[in-house]
Each structure stands twice: as structure tokens, then as C-alpha cells.
Amino acid sequence: MVHGANSIKKQLEWATKNLFSISCSAGLDSEVLLAFCLNKNRSYLLTWPEKELTAEQLECFREIIKKRLQPQPVAYLTGSREFYSMELNTTPDTLVPRPETELIVDTVLDLLADLDSPQILEMGTGTGAIALALKKYKPKSNVLATDFSQGALDVARSNATKHDLTISFEESNWYQHVPERKFDVIVSNPPYIAEDDPYLSQGDLPAEPIMALSSGETGLEALEVIIQDASSYLNKDGWIVLEHGYNQQQQVVEMLEKYGFNSIKTLTDYNDLPRVSLGLKI
Ligand SMILES: C[S@@+](CC[C@H](N)C(=O)[O-])C[C@H]1O[C@@H](n2cnc3c(N)ncnc32)[C@H](O)[C@@H]1O
Image 1: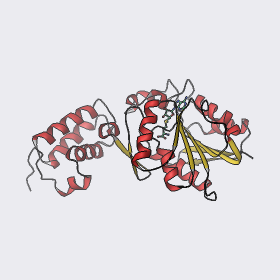
Image 2: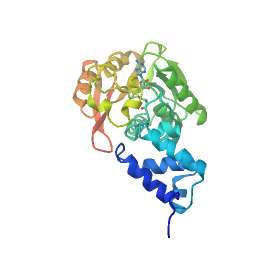
Image 3: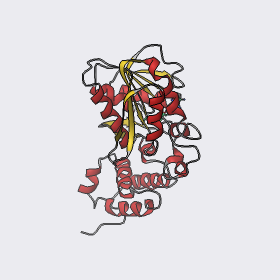
Image 4: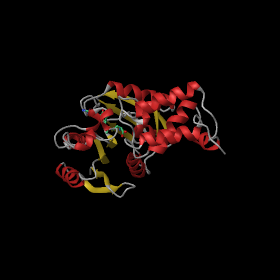
């Protein structure tokens, strides 16, 4: 079959070729963005490759590909990203939730398997991804989620409403406004990239909020603040669970030892990289 220049197939080929220079998922990005402009799902594109785009659809696609080339992350352009089978609103105020972060949710759900209505504190919630996933799969839990960014908290609140999940939110510089009560788990995916790491200027990262990515010179600053005071907010037999860089396992484990945690473990992500460390308060 012959496909015209304005057909779905030809437009996807054009966009994919253009996006190769900035994205390692150029084909997928093109499909997601075209599906967004057509208000259809990706399977529609594969079912109707010969379908011609209208002038309005073509304009939407040209514009959105131009923005992707800046580069702006796909999740900011479509306004959403899937995490733990939930569609989450995502804006430039929030980190784009990463698939690797699903590991921290799996880990916490395993740790809390025997508690019916656990008390959970998530610090640095961003879109609310971790807090929402925990509440969804542990519906009787009591979840408090914090962030220092009011913009991120607005997005997290909108996501809680969208998914009909009841979560308490608090604007807080780490523990500053966390009420003096005890939790069964403190979980966080804090900013952990060193401020001079060249990775910060690569790919989509320059478009994401710097406070979501880096907390200082070594990248370990936020992790230490969180670990240092965690014991005062944890019940006996409570856990701290932290995501960190693949190269920070040793330092994080040493910090957990230094601040008195037990049964310390590090888990690897789907790429077999050490990503999540946890410790028990006894
Ligand atoms: C790596 S992002 C994680 C976002 C989300 N939890 C996720 O996993 O997708 C770190 C989050 O910590 C927040 N943050 C940075 N500094 C903070 C601080 N001093 N106190 C509280 N939250 C902070 C950022 O605004 C950001 O939302």
C-alpha cells in the first residue's frame, strides 16, 4: 500500500528520524506524541498507518516535535506519565517519575505486608508517585507526603484527587514541618546527583527542576539529612527505605550504620544496579 506524505506512517518516520539526535527512544516518543495530538492510543497508529492527518493534527505534531527537540521531556508535553499502572499528571514543577522507582514501592509493600494500617511518611513526593502507589495497594495505610516545592505539591494533590486516594500533604524542608509522630516506614527518592555531575546537562535533565535532582556538592546531602533524623520519627521495628545513585551504595550503607540502623540491605533494580537501601530501627 502507498502511504501519502501526511499519513500516520510517514509522519512517524519523519519524527523518528528527527528525534534520533536527542532521544534514545525516538520511535516511542514519536508514537506517544502523535497519539497525544490525535487523542488516540498508540495501537490506533499501528492499526491505521495509511490514515492522513488533518491540517490541525499536522500542526499539533510539528509543534510538539519542535518542543521535544529543545529538548522538553515527553511527559511535560503530554502532561502525564504512567507509574505503577497509574496515569499521573506531570509538569515542569515535578520530576518525571522513573520506572526504576517502582522498585522502592515494591520494597515498601513487601516490608509492610503484615501490617494492616501502617503509618507511612514519604519525603520529596514530586508527582506523588510513590505515596499514591503505596496508598493504592495498601488502602488502609495512613500516608503523609511532603515536598519543599509548592508547585510539586499542587501536582501531587491533583493526582491524589484524580485517583481518588486520600493522602495528607505538607510543605516541608525535609523534617521541618513533619508532625512529631511515629511512622512504620519513612520512604524517599531524594535528589542525589552531585551538583557538578556532567549527567545533569544531558538528555532531558536540564528541563527538570534542579531541586528534584541535586541537593549539593556530593549528591549525598539530602540522603544524610533524611537518615540522620529518621530514628526520631520511626516506630520500633520501623524501616527507612531510600533510593540512591547506582554508585552510592557504600556511602548510604555507611550512613545507615552510623545513625544506628540494623538489618541493612541494598536491592538492585531491573538493570541489576544497586538502587534502594533500607535499614531497620530496633
Ligand atoms: C528525585 S525527586 C523524587 C520525586 C518523586 N518522589 C519520584 O520518585 O518521582 C526529589 C523530590 O524531593 C523534593 N525536595 C528537594 N529538596 C527538598 C527538601 N529540602 N525538602 C523536601 N523535599 C525536597 C523535590 O522537590 C522533588 O520533588
